[in-house]
Image 1: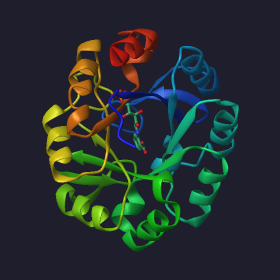
Image 2 (image 1 turned 60 degrees about the vertical axis):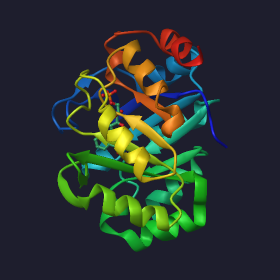
Image 3 (image 1 turned 180 degrees about the horizontal axis):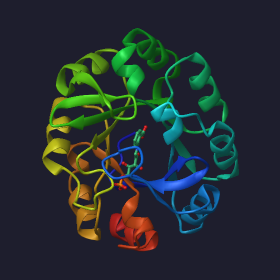
Length: 243
Ligand SMILES: O=C(O)c1ccccc1NCC(=O)[C@H](O)[C@H](O)COP(=O)(O)O
C-alpha cells in the first residue's frame, strides 16, 4: 500500500553484544552505545513504529548476535527490520522465526542470486534487499567485497519480484554528512518499488529533504548516528515526518 508519510526506522547495530555505530561501515571504527535492548526499548518508548536491527558480527563474519537479536525482536511491540549476515536457509529461517516484520538480504542477493530469488518468491514482502553502494558499485560481505553494478542488479531483482530496497551510500554511512539525495532519486527513477534510505542523516532538514522524495518512491529512512549523537531526538524527527 503506498504511504504518503516518511517512515522512520531508528537503528540498533549490534557488535559483540553492544549497540555501536561504525564510520563508513568499517569494522573496528565503532563507537559503543551500551545495551542494544535498552536502545531499542528507548526508541520504542519515544514513539518509533519501526526498529532497524543489524547484526554486524554476522555481516562481517566475526560471529553472530543471533540470540540477542531474537531477544530484542521478541521484546518489541513495533515492527522490526532485521539485517546482517542473512545468506542461507538457516540464517533466513532464524531471522524470520524471530517474528520480525521483514529481513534485508545483502551479500546473498549479489553472490547467490538464485537463492535470493527463491527467498523473494517464497517470502514476498518479508524480504527487502539492501543495496549498499560506493558510486554505482555494489558491496557485499560487510561492505568489503565487490558486487557488480547497482542498476543491473536492480533490474534483475525487480524482474524477480523484489518488494523493496534499502539503499545505503557507504561513503555517507555513520558520517553525519547528509543522505545522498541524488543516488536516492536515481534509484527511485529506475524502479517502481519502495526505497528505504539509509546512511548519513544528520539533521531534521535531511529528514524534510527525504520526506519531499516520498512521492518519487522513498518510503522510509533509517537513522542511526544522529540519534545516538543527539543531533535531534526521535520525538522531534517523528514530528517532522508527520507534519
Ligand atoms: O545493514 C547491514 O547489513 C550492514 C552491514 C555492514 C555494515 C553496516 C550495515 N548496516 C548499517 C546500517 O544499517 C546503519 O544502521 C544505517 O545505515 C544508519 O546509518 P547512520 O544514520 O549514518 O548512522
